[in-house]
Image 1 (cartoon, helix red, strand yellow):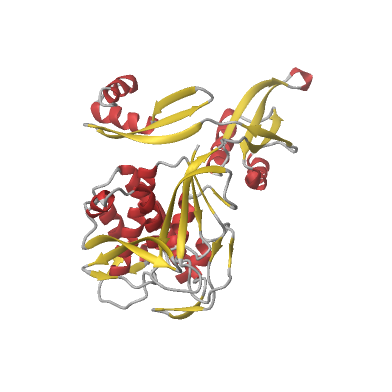
Image 2 (image 1 turned 45 degrees about the horizontal axis):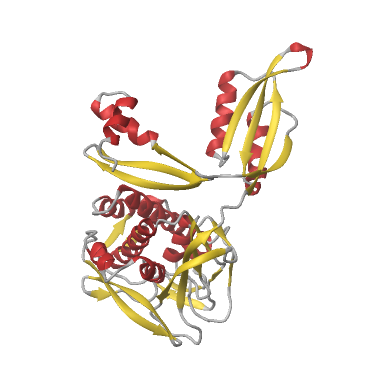
Length: 395
C-alpha cells in the first residue's frame, strides 16, 4: 500500500507541510508552475532550498501581492481594512483552476478552521471574518497541500503525535497561550504534546490539514521508504525546524472492527430505516439487516452494526435511543480490505470520480454513483447510459 507518514517533532504549519510534500512530488520546478497556475488571486509560489541545523530541505514561499506573510499563520493577526467571510473564501476556492476533488478538500479543511474560530469567538461561522492577506495565505497553503497529495496519490496517510510548542503568541485579540485556542480545538482527538521549544509550532492551518487528511497518528508504520521530503519552517531553533515526510510501501494488515448485533420483532420498516440512517450518519462503517425467525414463531429482524472500536459507545447510544431492543451483542473481528484510491476522469459532462480497489491479485473499478446520477439527470438518460458515456473518455 502506498503510504505517506508525516513526522511532526517541530509541529506543523501549512507551508511546512506543502514544502515537505513538494520535495516528494516536484520535478525540476514543474509542480511549482502548476501551483502558480491554480489561480489564487495575488498569490505566487516560490520554491527554494533551505538548511536547518545542517539538514537541507525545501521551503515553499507564498507571496501575497508580492509580500510574504509572517511566520505565524493566524487569520486575524494583523488589522487591515479588508476582511473576507467564509462565503468569500468559498467563492475564491470554487474559481480555482484545480480538480473538483482538490476544491472539495480545500473547502473542507477551511471549514474545520472556520468552525474552530467560530467556537472560540462565540459567533456563527457566517459571522467569522478573516484577515484578507492571511486568508489568501491559508488558501495557498491548503491548496498546495491538497494538490500535492492528489499528485502523490498515497492510499494511506498517517502522522506522528504533534508538538504544539509552548509559551504565548500575539494576535489581534491580545496575548494567547500556545497552542492557540483555535489550534487546541482542532487538535482534539489528535495526540499532541508540548516539548522543548517555547514558541508556537503548530498553527490552525497545519492542525486542520493533519486532522482532515490523516487517518491515524502514532509511530511510523513498517514500510519500505522510497522518498523523504524535508519541509523547512521560516524560523530557526536549536532543533531543526522542519516537517519530514516519508513515502513508501506498507503492508495492508487486517484491522480490528466491532460488530454490534441485536434482534427485534416490534419495529416497523420506517423505524428500522430511520435507525439505519442515524447509525450511518453517526459513523458506522456498515449496517445490515437479516430476516429472522423469533420465539413463538414471530417474524423478526437481526440488525448488525459494523464500526470502529472508538465509535462503539456512540453506536450503542444510537441503538438504544432509536430501537426497541434492550440488549446488544458485541464481537470483535479482523477486517481485510483491498487497497483503495480515487482517480478523476475528465469528460465533457464534468469530472467523474472512479474508485479503484486492488490487492490479493484482483483489481476492481467503479464510478462514483453521485457523479453518474448527476450526468444522468442533466442529460435525461439512464444511469447505465451515463456510465457508457463516461467509459468513452476513460483512458
